Length: 229
Image (cartoon, rainbow, N blue to C red; front, side):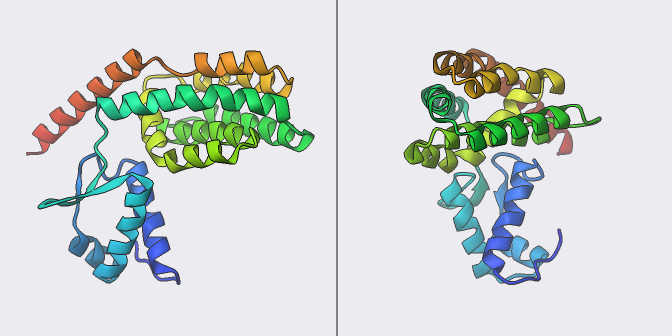
């Protein structure tokens, strides 16, 4: 691990640890030991603890009695909740964005879609990079709804949503992932609220499918852990 040497140590430590978690360096359910992290980052334990508290508020680490800090370990019920949260928020956000989109918002949305397509066409792009692009696109659509409460709710679970996307996208072709969002963006830019809402809902992988992917990922993780012992 690299050292944190600039000011705002707690924030930088939180940024660094967040990246390690979301990139998969720390696996779901893995223990995070304050003293070990403090030694590796050459920071005080109190600074590391404050950084972990920040990540706990974001919902990607938890503190368990007698165990300590752990990376969040999403289960099927968590995925069920995130799936239904998407179903509740994304279609209405697409509807509102289509109704209220300004010329500036239309340009931002088109630029984001183009970046998504470019990233998907990059040789060797992985599901984590695509997940970040998908989250950025959906977050922008929710922002363009001009409903700050909707946007606040979506941002509160953004990092958990990123883990959700990582599970979903790992079996898809990058070009297909990006291209599947183009009709949604086109409908919003055209101001077709009804179509945009329907496409937003259709774009969400069914819960049964995401559940099967989760089970496959869990089994792969179990076999990997067994092999490391």
